[in-house]
Image 1: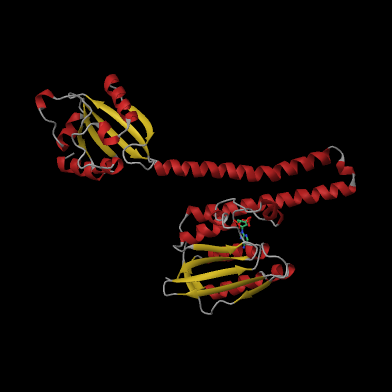
Image 2: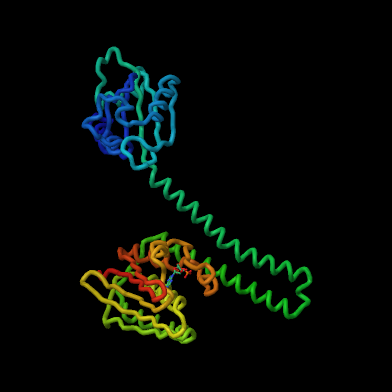
Length: 357
Ligand code: ADP
């Protein structure tokens, strides 16, 4: 590789790289490493690794690498500027006669070529986001398992009781079978919501221009019977002619989830109203109910997966705890935003915006 190419690589690579001499002074450092460590007091070249990073852990790993002559890898936090970034540190001790020296020496030739000291190459890789995503995935799997276990345990208990003889008692068996069917429906709803979420996450939305006004009218009409059943007055007061550029099926899903919640969490005799407005860039839709409302401490969490303010009520009304997280994901994948405001005991307003082009 040419010296120019190597210099470019050294400058542009995302991995932080430092060359440290045998006295642990920084001999060379690339811009990525400066960004990761932070240069509080000017240039880091010439400083000791401890002065530059304030990390005894890193210096101790370097000592181990230097004394053993072996490569060392370790995950560390708290190197350089505070902020809790997680770094994967790799240290390669290099002997001057080692073949790996030659490419490096073209980047910045070591002084005194005839009597080169041993040095080490320290590589810093920012894995904060990777670790965060791993935690999110672990929590999600744990939550899903928990959500599936509850109905499964109930189905099993009922089925075993039937097996143990309850099947011969007509009234008991009828009750148990009804519960089993209810739990199976619950499992099906959870799986359907998980599939919707996973489909939405797996690819960016395929967008077309369509009439949001027509879609809102259709969905509102379909919810007519459900609103009537709960004696909730459902009205659509959105202006005519609203158009958006979005995925139609996913937009329908947003409306279904928000309307379903608005009706579900509103007591008999309440109202649910859909309103909206447009600017040149976006259409914003509000779904306002006169329902149970949400306490301010719960508001920031309602869009989290499986978060429910009142578990028993959500479960009773067939909730999965995934509806709002699906809404948030779809809206944000379209470049829009979701908002909620609520007054406990008086009602809530959920709003979302979608682009018009
Ligand atoms: P669920 O399936 O439980 O309805 P969601 O993700 O749709 O799950 O909503 C999360 C939680 O937010 C609900 O369990 C409920 O506590 C609260 N919530 C959502 N919409 C409303 C609303 N319109 N009024 C009051 N509470 C709501």
